[in-house]
Image (tube, rainbow, N blue to C red; front, side):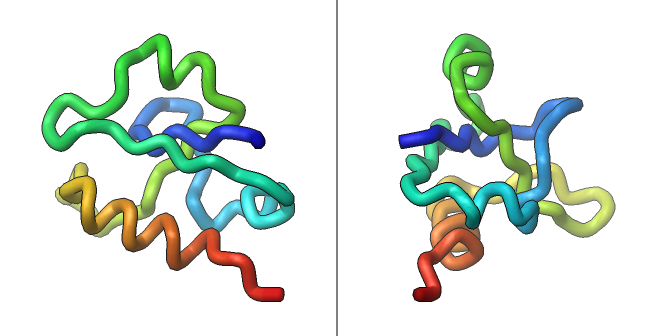
Length: 77
């Protein structure tokens, strides 16, 4: 498995990036609501992924973020 840490960082990639759906096995790592993922977990991930949102919105609760991530990264074959 390759890992995708869901986090807002300066070098995160969009969840719509095709590199993510090209991975045959991708584990999505979600943080806690409020605190998010620890920095060492983010650093250890293969990808750091963000969900693009409207201006002024900086986060989703973990259930909503997971639903968006699972839908966007679903296998369509």
